[in-house]
Image (cartoon, rainbow, N blue to C red; front, top):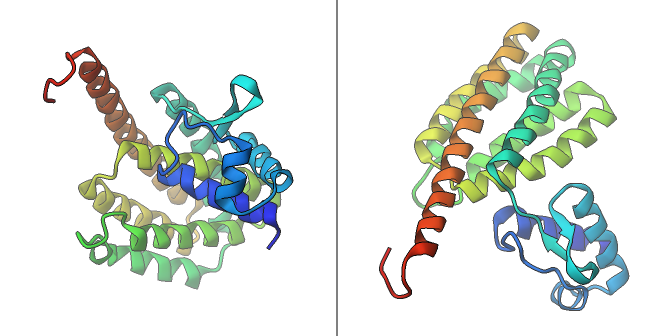
Length: 229
């Protein structure tokens, strides 16, 4: 794997997971040393992340991890609905029925993956990634695949920043099951509708959590130092 690709994947994961918080400076010297690469491949990785909106150029031409606001999330989901509904429609027309039937069955059993022993819900999100990969293969459209890949980075980050609600994940699994089953049945109309329902519910959940977090942070900032929350 190229050094630039390795640096890109590591930085992307650190930003999406929240290990690198919004506003964190990504100094070339520090990040190159941390990632074990030279500054040239690091710059290439930062340019790719900038193109995806995960970081921005700040003071002194230094990249920083981008902030994400409720308005950013709304704009993101406007694009997400357009792209993912189209992907679901094409998948229902072109996809392998058996693949999506299997995914529908797995999502039907997904509550077993939401264990208190896995607070990051890694097993559940691997299943979501499997659905994403199946959709990408089914649409057979490289331009749409590239657009979706960039979008998913931002969506995953927004979801992590808003914190996962286990009860919402149970409902999301049912919504994913409906999407997968509609595609397995070749029902493009239902696949689009089920995708739209899922996205709107996800948007409401993320916005509520982000707004609550913002309000809490603002209230905390108004408290005198040393005052308990």
